[in-house]
Image (cartoon, rainbow, N blue to C red; front, side, top):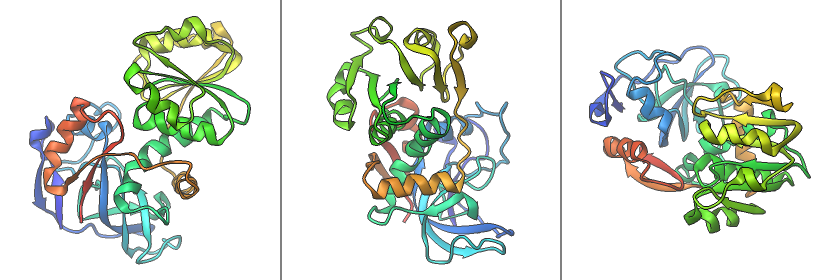
Length: 310
C-alpha cells in the first residue's frame, strides 16, 4: 500500500509517500480502506517530535489519527463491525496512522459513519466533534439552561462546542476574533465577544461551565466568570496555574480517548444535523507536505485540512 510517512522527526519536508506492507490483523482489529484522513495540529506536533514526553512512536511512522473509510477485513473478536461497513475511526498515535491506503485500528475504536455524509465531510468533523462531546457532555456535564462560555469558538473544536451546546439547550457566550463574529453567531451562540476588542472578564459572570481551548492568560481570567461550584474544562491548553480551590470551582482536563461509543454518539448527532461538516480545504494524498504546512501555519482558520486518499 502507499502511505505518507516520515523516517526522522522534523518539519513537513521529512514527509514522503512510500510503499509499505498492509498491516496484519490481530484479534480485535479491523483493517480499513481509508477514503479521507484528517490532518490535525497534533499530527504535526508528533511528526516534529514535540510530544515525545507523552509517548514515543516507532520510526518510520505514518501520521494521522482520524479518518473515514470502508472496512476491508476484520480480525477475530471484532464482531461489532463487518466487511464493507463505512466507518469513522481513531488510530492510536504510536501505531499505523490514517494517512495511508489502509489502516489497522481496534474495532472498538470505530463507528458507522453518518449515513448522509461523504467520507471527506465526515473526516472534516469527526475530530472536533469528538473533542467537543467529551468536553461538554462527559466532563462539563452541560445540560439545558446551563450558562456556558466557550473560548476560541471559531476553530474546529470551538465551533463544534457551540453546535452541541445549542443542541443541549445551554445559554451560550463565546469569545472569538471580531472577523469571526457573524460566523460564530450563525452556529447558535447567544452572545459573542470579540477578544481583540472586548474583555470577557469584565462583562461575563456566573457561568456554570467554561470551555478553555486556549489556556495562559485566558485561563487565568476565566476563574472570575464562573459561579462557585462551576466547572472549568480545558483541552490542550497552554500552561496555567490551577486556582480552582481559591475560586471554589472544579478544574477538569478533558482527556480525548476516542472510544467507539463516543465516535458513535458523534456520528448519530451528525445524522441529526447537530454537527455540520467543517471542510477547510481538501488536498490529494500526494500533497501531504503541503497539508502539514497549512496546518502548522494556521492558514486554514475555519474547518479542517483533509487528505483525500481515494
